[in-house]
Image (tube, rainbow, N blue to C red; front, top):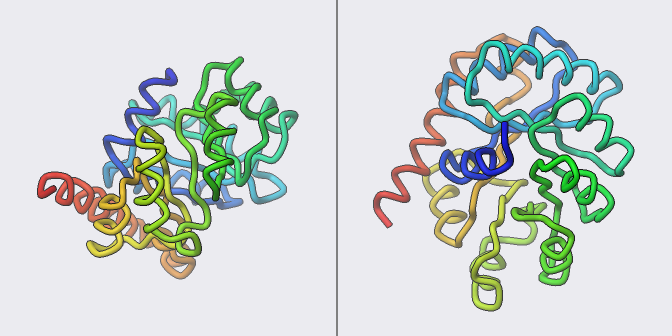
Length: 221
């Protein structure tokens, strides 16, 4: 998927589910449920020994069966790892902090790079290094007031908030009201007990509800 389409999807849908699972079959079910719920940009986190193998299989599967889905990789620390996932075909890369070398690899590949930031200086440096969207993490620690406050000096910054965002009307309204471009949701969409039960209908419903809350907020604001 091309870069601009991915960035538009992030914003239009507003909700970016993020997860890791070591079992490819479970990972497929989670992706399918999220897709049925309306998610069109999903982040698989690089947090397990066989993350690369599972992700590569997921990419092949989604390209074949889930049209219009942008599948990216998260928790990438360095350019070498980034290149490995770029070569595998990732649609975007998310990093927990600002590493311009990763940004450079993404620029060369013409895919979005979403680096983690927590200060205005980091936002500026990320933009200088080519990031069009930045990730505020951890959102619940930094707070929505920060997102609102930086709209003054940096009105055009596009922020995806991750960490502490809840799939509730209050939380969605708080973050999008502050000016979030998108929000990332992990454990609140994929509780361990729900995944262990194989209750994928619950996941589909929770993803759909979260996306509906974004639409509702935008239509009322």
